[in-house]
Amino acid sequence: MDNNTRYLNIIKKLNLQEENSISEALKKKGLYSASETFPLSAIHFELTYRCNAFCRHCYNNSGVGEDVVSPDNWIEFSNYLVSKGGVFECLLSGGEPFILGDKLFEIMDIFHEDGSIFMLMSNGSLITENIAERLKKYRYHWLQLSIDGPDEEYHDWFRNCKGLWKKAINAAKVLSKREIPLKIACCITPYNLEKTKLMFMLAKDLGASSIIVGEVSLSGRTNANRDFLLSDEQREKLWDLVGEAKASYGGSMLIKTSNKVKRGLEKHSENPRSCVVIRPNGDIRIDGMAPFVIGNILRDDFESVWNDKIDSCWQDERVRQFISGFNDDDRNFEYVNFYDKDIYLK
Ligand code: SF4
Figure 1 (cartoon, rainbow, N blue to C red):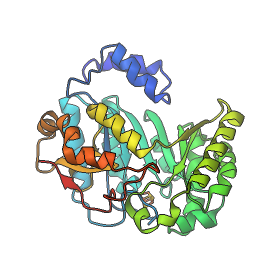
Figure 2: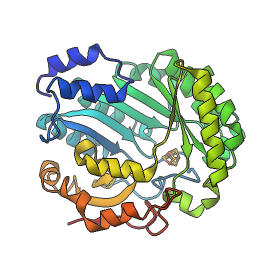
Figure 3: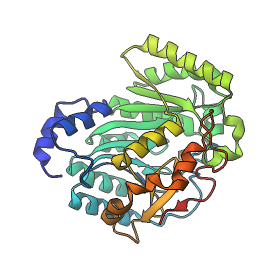
Figure 4: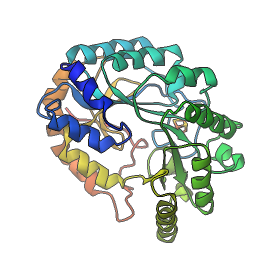
């Protein structure tokens, strides 16, 4: 990044877990302008389709398909982005990103040395003491682990992976022991709603700095498991439980709720340059929750695609229709994300 030393001096004084205040501070200091291409505000790499779980709700249907972008392709693309001016925030997910082994750390090192702040999403299965030790050096908004309940039976069933809960709990402990900002993500369905309160307690015991709870979205494998979707009554119950938790945990653990999909897409369309997703097949997707592709990093020059399409794509009639197709329950049954085929916007 240009102004790298100045940038590092500024973020050193900030609490990196306060995501919104960071970008505001950078804008104020003139280090970030949405009208310039680089540094990018944020980028999301879905590093692999591969996952050692096969969750019944998986929003992006991971565990299906072969990766087209190899770990070395990711390294090359990361170097390309940094050579162009870098990225402030880098979100890494999959599938399960730790399946990449040492290559994950190579990718992180490229961004880390350029000053990027990470958000990392994992199911926790591969995070050992040794891995946690290696993760200590990076800057994070958060490192997110999925834990869907206070007991292993439900979690392992929901995620289709025996022994996963125990591994995720161990991962949470080894991360929080090293003061890596741990965020627990808990998907709420009718089957674990009653355990939400216990889940807040568990997250606190595990030393999480935040927990995000939210209902499962109609996306990916949830389309075949629609019984995971909450009713109005169940949603109200969840909001009550979240309200109570916010009151009782105060500032000791941040309690967050997942955004409504439609509102998230509307906000993204107002700020198209805020983020883009790169998929394991190289597709440049406009949003994880919107099935529209504007190019491919293995075929196209990313900077040209960004400059030519990133603003206009959100005005495409098909994108507008997709967003307006969400009903009052925040579900689009006409075109299901990661179930129906992605649409290439020329
Ligand atoms: S939800 Fe996460 S852990 Fe589960 S299959 Fe999808 S990527 Fe893997």
